[in-house]
Length: 91
Image (cartoon, rainbow, N blue to C red):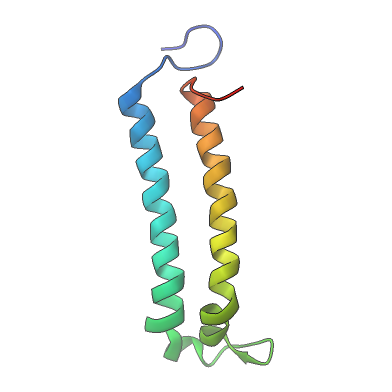
């Protein structure tokens, strides 16, 4: 139900569900990149060359860091959006 401003009324349960969903999604991407691509799937990714080395090594040394930076910006953007949806944003 909207209050006429396009915002949902404050709903703590919905807010935290959206927050936890965002955190879990970020953690899944983090685990996939740091453990999956860099360690578990490294033998499979070693046949794909990138920048003079293989993709598994690249993820372990540089790619995971870049993905983590993207995750930080994504999390900040997504939390700002969720805050606006639930009317708890800062001015």
